[in-house]
Image (cartoon, rainbow, N blue to C red; front, side):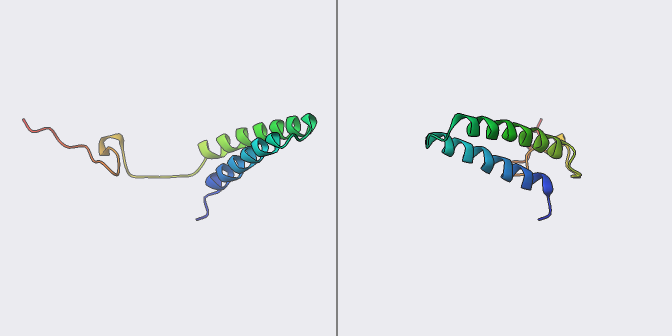
Amino acid sequence: MNNKAILWMIFTTAFLILITILSSYNVTFKWIFSLVILGQAFLIITVYKVLKDDYKTALTFKDGYQDHPIEKEIE
């Protein structure tokens, strides 16, 4: 798996969870605030990476969901 967009997503999620844990342990406000600003920057980068990801598929909306295909109506 060499999908960098997913790796950014995992990293950003773990970072924001770390901020939540640190805030519950009464870390000083300036550290939490700085980490939140950094986390927001990571979130913006992650959204950009996901939207610009070079992912190609042959499926269309007519194919429906992969786990539940659309049944054709019988007339």
